[in-house]
Length: 288
Image (cartoon, rainbow, N blue to C red; front, side, top):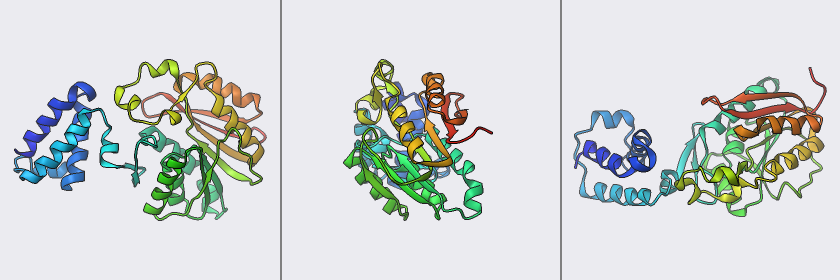
């Protein structure tokens, strides 16, 4: 079997669940992981014959994918903001829109970082640690903290900090009961925000494999974590400190109203690359 034949085999097996474009992307991830071939290698080596061992490995991987298990969990790894991360079913698979949130934080703190201000940042609901680790990697002088209620998630995040050679302070706590005497310059969070009503529209490979604890909130109180994190931020942010949220695109207005009611200022809503209302930045302090 050639690589081109293999790509057709992947497309036939996965297109009904993922669509042809995503099935091709999954195929490229598979050959990169098992063969070390990038996209350009595939283009140049389409007619290359696979060894029996390579075919068996890729066939086994495809069988797992056909069960609905996401490619990142099958491989046990992914890339986020250009960095390697270990992932497993105890943590969400990092999304591209969260990379945009990290980029916004870095842009917003660039001046402070440039003048050697020792920033203190905390990532709430860290999961795989993708936000905290990426921020620390790009802001090496900053103190970065990461909090999660799941010990399994924290274990994964700690492994990712080690993998990327960064020092992050991890905290095991539920933000709804957590108090801190410390002060921070920046609070960042991508908390659970998918309502149970929206759950019905989600793909099976997300519902069956990714941790519901990190995804879902009730229809009756969908902003429960935003309220808890806003209260925490008001009590712990320094004057003019920044709060960043990834949000539910359908609850942007309600999230903004919540932040206004809690006296946050300079509230800015930002769309992601797909044009969806996805991120909010605000300040603790006087509006400018």
